[in-house]
Length: 199
Ligand SMILES: CC(C)(COP(=O)(O)OP(=O)(O)OC[C@H]1O[C@@H](n2cnc3c(N)ncnc32)[C@H](O)[C@@H]1OP(=O)(O)O)[C@@H](O)C(=O)NCCC(=O)NCCS
View 1 (cartoon, rainbow, N blue to C red):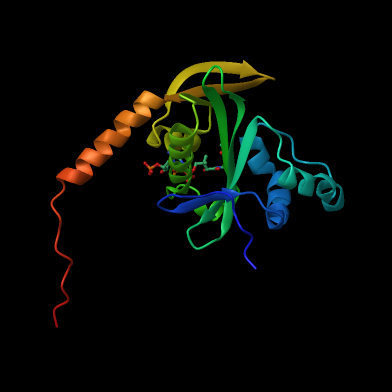
View 2: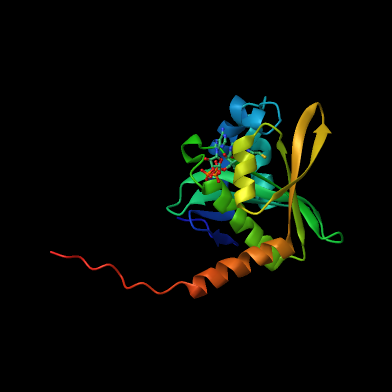
């Protein structure tokens, strides 16, 4: 039986939905993957699956306040990664976000930028947050390009725990301008007749 979601946010290529228990095997595999953890500036996990599962269900049932996690599925339901926003500062109107596509088959095909756009649409429409920022390793060009496609702008270099990060941000007003442009473009596009098949 499909688990009911409180939230399922539909993008063009992905659906962002609540985390679920059946994500555990993928999440564990991705946390052990040395390339993925290197891109995330973190060490690989050193827990057995049994140890990992001691905490996993609790985080699903009682998610930590101050952050919101989503699984990223393709539109046909394959779990390919995760994203979240965290360090939510409602008073200051800002939050940090992070994303990881664990399944390499989906890298550089637009899934990441679509997931980020979908998450931004949710944050800017449904929360009082007006600034979203992120940190990505300064050599992770694929990530920089993907985030730029979603509207993020590089702000400054940040050195943290012996890693060099690029900080990027997007403001609600920039996101809104982007939306207005997209909507204006759609409205001014002539409606094309559907293609006819000739025999
Ligand atoms: C970072 C990530 C979310 C980006 O999502 P994605 O779906 O792979 O990226 P997109 O397809 O949206 O955009 C990537 C762009 O970078 C380009 N690109 C990829 N590798 C590149 C490289 N080595 N040099 C230059 N450009 C590169 C792609 O061609 C694409 O640009 P285009 O659409 O103009 O052709 C995803 O790759 C990922 O999760 N990677 C593993 C973990 C990671 O890096 N996390 C980031 C933590 S901040």
